[in-house]
Image (cartoon, rainbow, N blue to C red):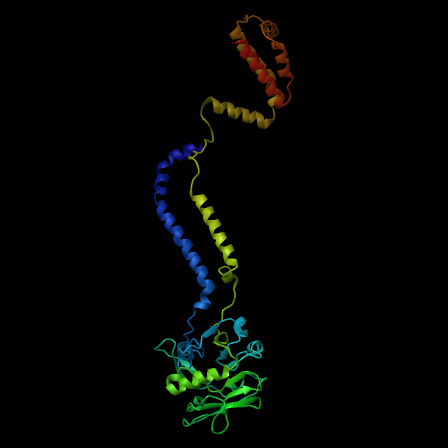
Length: 409
């Protein structure tokens, strides 16, 4: 059964199946799918950058009581050019870097190596918190961290002993070259450190270090985060002291302050997917998208008229002849058809040229040789009988056909 016949018998079902989805519906589905796929790729590449950081942590994105988003906003409002560091490669900036690790177990070695000789302020952790169940991003303070936690922040390179005691809100004591505002009322309770590796810059009444400098390097330790965190700077004098403290340790001439959040798990890496959407690879990505769009357009748009499928088996005598010729060709017997073709042409010539019916084949061939023309019929018949290959058979058949055409003109 032919393909055309099959299509004709099932034509009604084909038309009904094709009308289920219109071209416009298919186009909309493709557009929505492509846009959705591209959006998922972009979100997957830039998801770390889109995290708000409002998780109640002790970092520059947190608006919790123990976070530092307030001092960042305050520094921005007063022209101190704050920014966030989300990649370790940005640690080598000449701006002051403020690091706020949430625990003393955070690995600080890579940061300290990158910040060697550059102004750095490390704020020690103090409070143990739990997420607020009523307000997202807020925390409830449940107490102080064990003193060993902040004490191990820079261990073993910089050993420290951390103590806490009631301060009574008494003023702190700053060195004479420090801003007077640093002699602000001490947080309650006050967390201080003692270490032979630290040079005291701001202390309490008992000499406990609140702000210390590691040797002669521009690396500073702030023992009590309440001098900078959101809860601490809610008072005007504490907010002023916080800004002056940043300016005091940022005395290298830098014009900005960088708050690190990579130590808090909010960094971003250069993933291969993200590189595809950033220069210099962005140009290659756009070129690939355009090439795919052109391929899709060529697939959707038809060039030229619709070509109906050919029948597997044709109608009539032509089909019978073609099928017979195919069988002979596959059997490799084309060369053996010469004598039969010559006999067929002889019978046609008998009828056309009036050859007497009683003559034998040899006598009929002699009779046909006497017809006017440059080619003898017996010669052509001999060539056809001698043909063994398809090319020879084709040449002999063409010669016999040409002989008949000449005689019937």
